[in-house]
Length: 123
Ligand SMILES: [Zn+2]
Image 1 (tube, protein in one colour):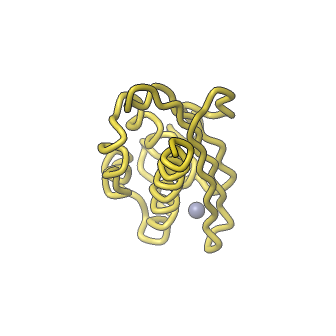
Image 2: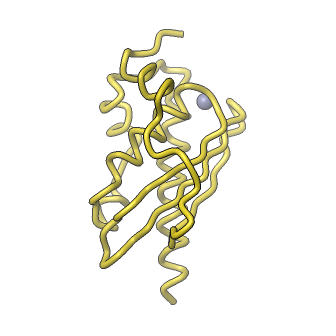
């Protein structure tokens, strides 16, 4: 399994790991293929993502994808976050092995789940 340098870096020292106590958006997704699980915490204020953290139990690709995605999310509007695609995460990581693409899809799904949770809370 060939991982890019960037994937290895983010796996060794992931950014934004942890539980965000003041989160007002939460998404939890699992990917049965690798046994990966991701919890995504976002703090949204005035339509902007102010803070993003994650807890991912999984392979190097899942952890690196979560790390990069939370970096990208900070400062995004809700609309921009909704449009965040796993391709963008993969690009940021300098590529992912074919067999690990689904790990980045899981992260995209976790972001979407968190945004749906946020919208449900506004009603
Ligand atoms: Zn995985």
